[in-house]
Length: 157
Length: 292
Ligand SMILES: Cc1cc2nc3c(=O)[nH]c(=O)nc-3n(C[C@H](O)[C@H](O)[C@H](O)COP(=O)(O)OP(=O)(O)OC[C@H]3O[C@@H](n4cnc5c(N)ncnc54)[C@H](O)[C@@H]3O)c2cc1C
Ligand code: FES
Ligand code: FES
Image (cartoon, each protein chain N blue to C red):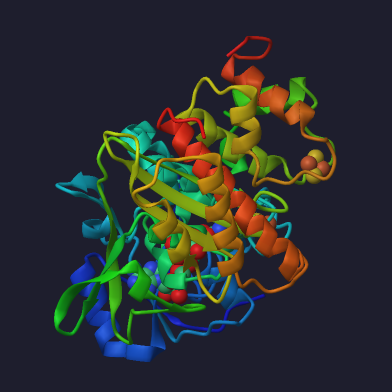
């Protein structure tokens, strides 16, 4: 079947099987390998992308066909030319990553977290990222990075 | 890990979805949030030939208090409930608690309440909550739409009153009076795990402080969520006390019929069910300003 998905503002029209998962559509059809696949079973949050600027979704658990006619934001769409997105900059500043495998999912989950809750407390952030696993950092610096991006680092919320 | 091939149909209205389901019958499955169905298809536990995607059926995107019921349409997400402005009213405290502990925060942005009821996992969270809140599910069939009491809707593990070619349109939670509060207590090994045991309670008080109505239900305590009738009967008409709460917890332990698995033994889970009912009752009462 034909699907047309707008990824980071660019329309990708491709002929795919209905069973093609969005994660593989992004990686193999669009060549956007920034969306990582960790568990492939909807448990780790590595593959999270943003759908229609509104929802963080696990792209390993959604069919590309469902995204037909929709907008998807992936990690490749965050930086503006050479300028990192404020959240990316915050991950850099706070050492919010080590191997970086979980980072795209952390970033995109956080974008939606901040959209719905621009002033999150530390525990709001920890709860909001509870579905995203990181095997390296111990989460501390990821939480700090999101606090920095929200402008609440060192602030009592 | 790759699902079996299927035909994808996108329904723009519930009428269209229903027509597809009638045409394909047992071959077809509704695709709501996909958070149970897609993993099941990836493991080839489910191999539907046709998927009817209802996510674009905007008439099912309902979440509002409609007279004496809260109407939750078939594509209302867990996160819509979590973020609803009225959800902080204590009469919705059971539903609010549940909307914050189902799966993980990303899954909740896609997963639906109605999809979870239709899936009817033995350890699902919305099933027990719907029993305690005495919800009804609207099912559309050949003869039109019918409201099914949640007790009759949950037939067996992964089996509901939704027949071949039918679909659920929504679930209705009765609007309780303002002397009502509930609580959901769940023990899980980690975020995103199903319950080891969970208890849903909802209490309405009379003006004199006695209990007018009680809903008590358990998840992960049998083939599907169970109502603890004995505890409900004990509580009704009584003044809340530590003793009464303990007795209700004991009734829940007796009613619980869990399976042993990696999450715990039968003995442990039965005991835990009682403990969680006690905690949930205390929490609901404290939300009503009653210490017991
Ligand atoms: C990592 C992870 C952790 C989870 N943890 C929990 C948990 O702790 N507790 C819990 O309760 N759930 C949990 N879930 C399940 C999750 O809550 C699902 O979202 C939910 O069970 C199903 O809702 P859905 O909208 O995604 O339904 P889908 O997956 O789309 O559908 C589920 C089933 O219901 C049928 N169906 C859906 N809607 C209708 C309808 N309107 N009419 C008729 N049939 C319909 C489908 O055909 C399918 O058979 C978890 C899921 C994941 C991926
Ligand atoms: S790869 Fe999608 S959740 Fe792990
Ligand atoms: S930085 Fe390595 S998994 Fe998170």
